[in-house]
Image (cartoon, rainbow, N blue to C red; front, side, top):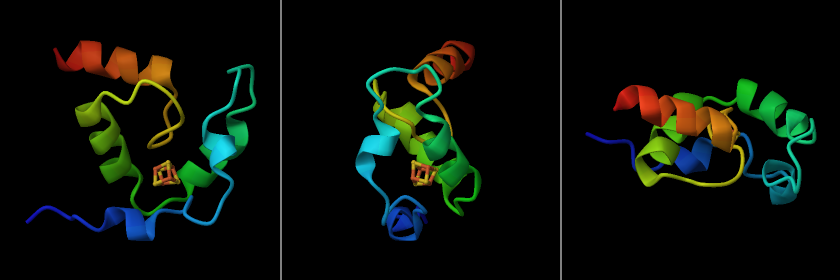
Length: 75
Ligand code: SF4
């Protein structure tokens, strides 16, 4: 059965959302990436972001450009 409550275990729940939506991608997303690297639900978060086609922000430890590449490889 799908885990519908993965967001309750998200490491970013108590952090500033702005960290995950930087205005530029010149390294300002690194703090969010560090939080994602220690997140218990990172794989599920990335799966969700890919399914949803999330166009912006850090999700599952990936940038929008990285998700676009992953989606291209998924066909
Ligand atoms: S992987 Fe990152 S964006 Fe996704 S729930 Fe965890 S901390 Fe939040």
